Length: 266
Image (tube, rainbow, N blue to C red):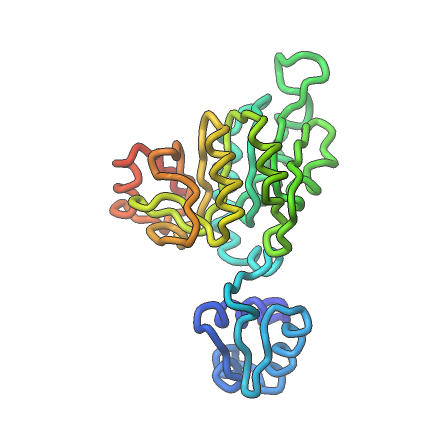
């Protein structure tokens, strides 16, 4: 296990258990207690946790892993989901992308599509292959080097955990735009409670993006389905397509389909 993998596992355990002790963590990871102490010290230096005498506790009351430490979770599933979502996008569309690990993979997949390497077929001279509206700094940074894409980045206040711009400035820009398809990343999607995320400012931006879109696609791995999160984005009835992995059973898909959501499992 590499140091990065160890750190990811330690942070996952910290979120799951609400705290860590050195000896149990060393046993769980199959390494020495000295290695765990050193890892915890280095994670504390990055303000990802708070060291205690015998281990560590989450940093702050509302703990959320920064995006860079969430990218390796369920990576294979996210790649399949991103490919399926990207296949639903038509050249020449205006698409909205929220922040998040899965939507970042969607952006990368779109950047690699051969039919989006130049202007959209039949479009006017100079028209972009795709117009991407996003409040995610990392997504804009990855796509802006693609001259065939038109990138619209909202203003706002940046959240270091997710690289997303939120607040009144961001909402003011987004409220003046319309998009063909919104691709939304979520922390939770429950048939009864709808789509949600942990942070209310992100939820407000995602909600507005859904309202400004003709079609709403939720891209979420199966671990996020049938669960609830703090801040609601939209009702299930507002979602057109759910793209997820095969971890969602037929019984789990049925309530979404009954609510009018097309469920794609890959």
